Length: 555
Image 1 (cartoon, rainbow, N blue to C red):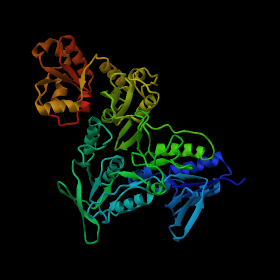
Image 2: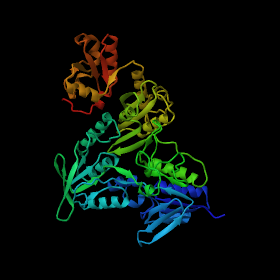
Image 3: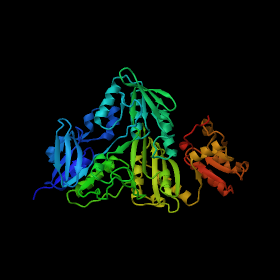
Image 4: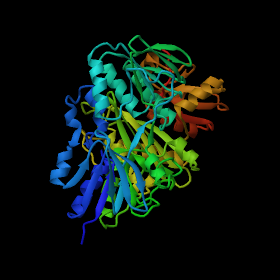
């Protein structure tokens, strides 16, 4: 019997994973891998760290060489070849050798599209000038690093406020380059709730990054050599000898469209749980594919390396006659931002509301280790839940402490459809160097349980600021010690230390709303309960208090 013929278009993560798994499943199938690039398997996520010299050699980012697939896995690898069309009726793919311009026809029994995504380059005037980059692969990273090492860049502009933008801001600051982020909205990290995004935003400002909010590029200006020197925006003119366009990416679906493959409502290729497209024997994997969000049941396009690798494994099994499924994602991710870790899983509050959930949230700062243990650091957790059922919907966690293991705990809880109450009783490990007896995730869950059960009432820092800006008639009560209050406070507050509150509460007007705050929220919550028990009906505590306050403080 003649071996099956599998053709995989695309490489990097999902394509090479598909090829490797298919070979392990079937040692006899003929597998051909086609890619436009010279390298087939590399870690594009590591390119910002190569630019900043955390990783010295770009070759370290190569996961597997083409010869590994040829010699070890018996995969026919065609680098620098482009697939130009697919004919599902004849089961053929027309490809072109990009070095010789020769064309070739390949026949397949099973076809896998692993064509990924590309930078979405806005049509700004002058965008073709030199020293305007996108960062999408190793050659582009080498170009950027080479330019930086010439030491001619004094000012850099990054257009965008997502992961690549933040990672590259750190890289550029490392070289002493004046670095600005230009964002269309009033916050970076558009997938995050504003409460958390603004804390990250304030932090990177302390590292020397200038944030240009609610602004847009209008035009790039070049010098006599054709290299960018100035950026004209909606609001201002900015000097910049280097520009990184980190605005967005889009799935590569042109080849699929031409072949009649269904494109989903997100704009990416639609597949079923087996990663099959609407056309028999054609599969699609990785960043070109939409998937199902496990909390909403709706299609989403969230391109992540973790998803691409899982897709490759599932597809590799199925195209060789197996039966595996990919149920969907939570959209879990983590990113290093200078000395902070920033992570998210599930739905943000705004995403949950958009999807029809009635939400309850909490913001809780904690120490990542026992507070007395050397090296204990601060993290801030925001949990999102469905109000009526207490079903956990998501989390956003940031800080310079250990964040990644906490986001993974919540991601696991989401996968098990856990409630906030169930999360609060998880059996998590403890020793002083690693956590506290009540892990920060459990503490946050307990605080949210109190809120869901109607035992406490809280308000976010952003809502508090909005009340102050509207000049609402309420009392903002600082219950910290006098030295803490004197070091920095929110303008317009009244100060009564917590240990004096019972004796001085007669100074407060019971008819007014009272919002208490402290350093991290614990004393504010205690003050709120004291007032509530004393008959103050309109009282709340400010979540996260000063640790989560992203605005100016009075000194």
